[in-house]
Length: 240
Length: 325
Image (cartoon, rainbow over all chains, first blue to last red; front, side, top):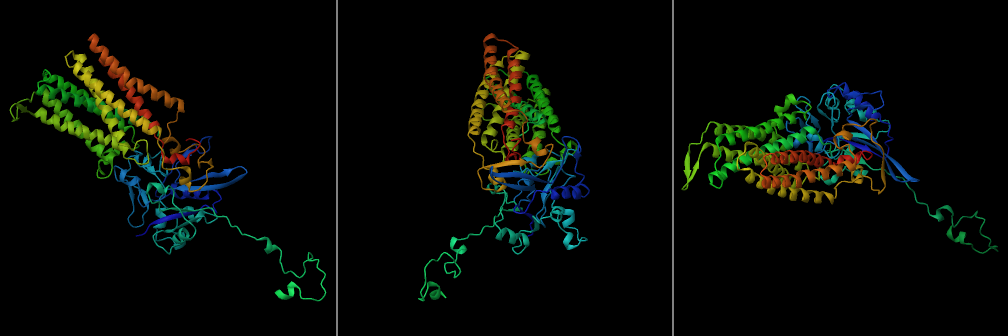
């Protein structure tokens, strides 16, 4: 069975919000739209977003690092939001595992948002129905698009390729390899929701240099050797 | 969690409605057993009507919780998996049975249908009363499980939520039955008042146990598991929205911690000692107004209790909104 998902590489995310704006742009004018914008140019703008980038600081100054954390629906394999829906508006697609909301059936009771530990769902203040990331279902299932474009808007927009998209059930897919080889992890695994989306951790590249790698013991040009030689074999002659 | 007034009214009103109905049926059962004088049929009929009015008012309040109330009928679809759907089905069922019970009394359908054992004459009202009792308890369980069933809200995910809903509802219903009896001036005030006091004390035990449990609750999720970074010092610098979002509104009560404490003490005083003292004073002074006052005060207290119940629940998604949390 196919389970489409995103893999988000925290190692290269720079927190530019390109995924946020491209998501809003694509989805507000597409199948899932419109996504409300209230007071967009005022002091307190408000609106529906499927994807938001948060920023966390790890450690205490001056020993800190910044983690930009893109956050959207994780398309859980055991989605807790689906069984609680009283109308069946919230469902998981059998063919590709994407969790969706039928906006024509949703009564806006907000119960599914209580049942999501990640806070991935937002009630649209205008349409009064629950909305969330669709993985751009109208793009990724559109056979008229070229293979290259059949990806979520956020994935195509990311300038650092921090977002990978694919089938996490296929062991040879780009996303599965990334999860397997680069320590991909799930959010809040303690709830047993089995999120399909994974995150790749921050990685630091370190090399270890021993002092004797900087100073060759057998360097013929070294000046430190103050022995006065009188024709006998030196250590260097033996070594070479 | 954000305490929505629609849900506060829904749960307190239908709780009292079911409780009043249970009080009417209990009164009839005691009369059948000849522990109490049998009342005129009108007493049970009007009592059931008041219970029905409360149930209808609760249902009406619940519509204000919905973004799309015109589609509310769809909510009966997923009763196999959703407690909310089950509540939506059982609530009209209870209403129908309460209505039928009241009508049966009003139209005096008290001719015995059959006899059980030596002396128990079973009539239509008794059968409807039994069915309605079962349905009322089912509704208490459904209403409570809407909250207790969400495992992420660990403050609610306990059987104590179910016992709270049952005993709070029953206590306020029996308190209302005492007030109703006092208003019409019949001798059942002491009977209902005693039961109301007992149920209030049981509810106190259940709620105190709940408060104690929640005071030392250890949440499963931490900000470390939320973003998957293993470090003790994690500070949020940006929440992804300038002016807040659904996530910063729906999952926070919006008041400060002093308000939370104030309302907690408020309901602990208004729901438990004050109504019991008033009912006791009414028994001593044979007052007909004190039981009514006792019910009104307890009901106000119950609305505070429900506010507090919502406000004290901390959702794991709040870990992503540290500056509000």
